[in-house]
Image 1 (cartoon, rainbow, N blue to C red):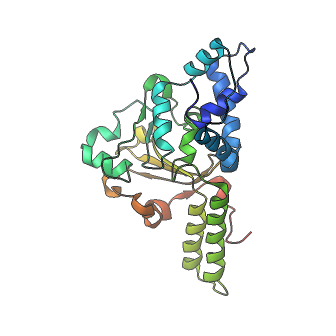
Image 2 (image 1 turned 180 degrees about the vertical axis):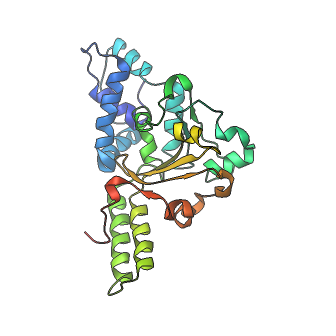
Image 3 (image 1 turned 30 degrees about the vertical axis):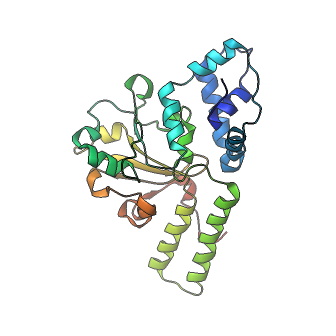
Length: 267
């Protein structure tokens, strides 16, 4: 059966038929390389699947190994993520019940989704995802998380979005030395780099008295652009409707990722 996900197309292309390494280890290594391709590299594989490009022929044993390297559910989540609707819930700590259990169905929809009635499957499996605080390892199972904010990005359009944000900042701040204005423009520049966004319930969440969910905004390589925590999930229903997250305290007061701490308004 042909791969219907760009990540599976890449997985087949890079799969080594002759190694005896565990299929999960092979998948993780290959997906690390897939993430390192960035938006431009992955775009080629999204287009290859879309156009029905020829796929590498593999032995039956290799196909079985590839199929077993991640679950059917993970592939279903991946297929939904690349449509660019909603922010899935990644649960990697199981010391306490899921924070979503205390919400009704409409509240869950409001927290996770940007379209009415659009329900994303959750990544919630103690046997697979109990990693404590290591959410990065989940990217090596479902790399589509890094392309989930708007769906896969045409690299030309992504770079134009970033350049437009920088140009607007330079024009708005021409000769100005207003700290609030600089902060506002930096918010806009950082947001232009975001290609993926998702919630995480980790061990820090479970250790907090009221349970503080982690919201991550990541760039095309899976690096943190910004991250924020909140125990008031229902305060942010509709957060992602038409990009409203950029105007929310969760974004504006978020911790800036290490790779973006040194970012300036120009350059």
